[in-house]
Amino acid sequence: MNRTAPSTPGSDTMLAALRQKILEVLADLPPTIRADLVALLGRPGYVLHADAPCRAGVLALEVHAAVSGQPPGRTALLTAAAVELQMEAAYLFDEVADDPPNGRRCEDLALAIALLTAGGTAAVDAAADCRDPSASLRRFCTAYGEACAGQFLDAMLQRRGAASLEEALEATCLKSGGLGGFIAGFAARIAGADEEGVALFERFGSSTFTFGQLLDDMRDACAQGELSDLAQHKATLPVVFYSQEGGSPVGLDGMLSQDIHETYESSGAPLYVAIVAQVYMSRARRDLSLLARRAYAVGGLGRFLKSVELGAEEILSAARVRLVA
Amino acid sequence: MHVAALAEALAGSRHADGTISLHQLDSLLSRAGLEELAHAVAALPERSGLVDQDESDGPKHPWF
Image 1: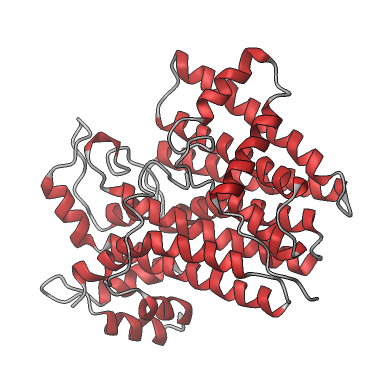
Image 2: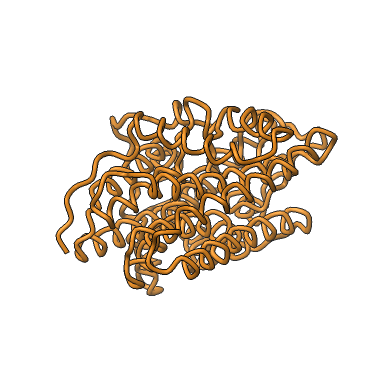
């Protein structure tokens, strides 16, 4: 295989094209819900917000470009729109899970389901011209199911309490790793990768998103106010490690005292999770090398991975510095 | 991944003053055959002058 280097899918121009494609997909929905969906997706962190990183869509565009060797066109944008909408649905579900349903949240649940159907519609259009549309779409559904299973496990462990380290990591790998694998695998299939290539792309996506989630969990464990994962008794890896080390319980008001902050830092939880996260970054780098050996044009994916790594640098190095002799 | 074994090794690498010896942790993991985790310890970044993008790409944009 001899593939030319693609243009840059993460560029502002390409993000604008992705956002335009998403608006086109949403145009098929009934007017009753369309305006609310567009407003939802314009919130901070969501795809239509100007500062949103659009990680799902960008990963899909990079994978598609790595396989096809072509600058992203209509099919690549539809592929990216499909996975981005699915990710936004999962993200919205997670927001609702963190904030028990009230009137507004019940509306958000309906919007999450609408996003799923819109993502499915875009996936059908993206798969129309690929080698095996039905197989691609079947995997689109089953792979997304892994992320759903992770969200279920995450919520169940939080309610049950006393999660083990293995359970906490399994939930992370299923929830976020599953989503990364889903995104990269679907884009690779649509672009025409063979099964071995698809498996490698899936693994790369899974490791990258697991790494990103672990870093998020490190950042959120001891965040200010009552929104920290510790205060919410979440079953994330740093919180579970801290609990198993006999960490002080959080007060009933959900606020973290300075004492708890210090106990958390000295428990070793940040360093522990940093090591686990580093394993996933190493796995992602290894898979990127394997993809390059198979002659995929992975330059853009390398830049994507580097941006993820740079975003994590401060948290990882701080975890190393605080306690290390 | 052997997350429970990593937790044990971390506890075994802790000094009386509460600090953790990365060298000892690396050795414990290697001796236990957990090479992937040992390599991860060695690969942990040291604080450097790299740009912190976490602030600009911060809590508004979680993976989940």
